[in-house]
Length: 362
Image 1 (cartoon, helix red, strand yellow):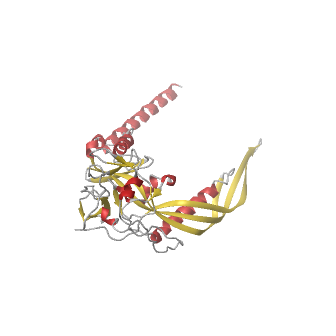
Image 2 (tube, one colour; image 1 turned 30 degrees about the vertical axis):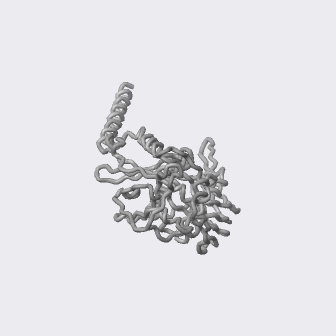
Image 3 (cartoon, helix red, strand yellow; image 1 turned 45 degrees about the horizontal axis):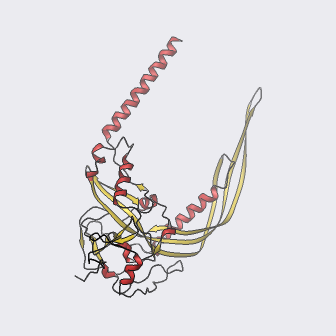
């Protein structure tokens, strides 16, 4: 097994971790706090980044790892879903944050580009648990036993790999629209329908469109916890990963272009549609969206993943580690659903009988 380097406290020699609450590195033993820049200055490894290969979008996303930088991580391989998880040398982990199965440590982390940016965690594990409890509130159909926090199998802070696409879009879209006017006289009711052909054209600029680079992470789950505020992103430094997991991308930038293009086209069509108002019906007849000037950046975004099982089913929840937005599907208690439906049906039946009785009296 290769030698593993960790961030050592200059004061007591203990392993230090990134604290999301103070946005600094902190030693859990002597409680000394350190700025990221101060710790990086102490390191003696080379920090010169090499450029990565060119992408279809005429860009270079990510870079090569500096000498010795990769040795600061342990690499874990999930034998169930195949996820490749990275953790700093101070973190002990035994379960996959995606499928909740045991994971084993491999010899070392090989290959992959060095991220350009990272958004540090701003919310900690306690905040994730609080959001989970809040997520359960008011959900009357959720089984009571499921809501017990003791059924949370794992809570992990994971840096998820994202490709960030910048592009300009030129578009022209044709719509078919209608308006109706109704009136009546002493003999007839009239309805007049007017038909219109509407044309919209223009340009829209897009910045940092996120597409997650992990095939193990459900795309709809990641899109549901958006947006991330890229203005808070900082140039990548390995110290931000201390105490957290980091997923290694297995979908490269070229393979992610299709999803980025789909998101751009959908956004353009929605924005153009919002400019067409005052009509009763609006149907697009043709849409032509052209992209140009595309560039890509590689970043790590903070996500809390919560795993739980109930009745043999696996449930995955996610929370934006920057904003706190929380999403995830919940199970339904079929017994509660049946009772509620029966109660509603009985109430409707009583009302119907009362209405019939009143009508009979009249």
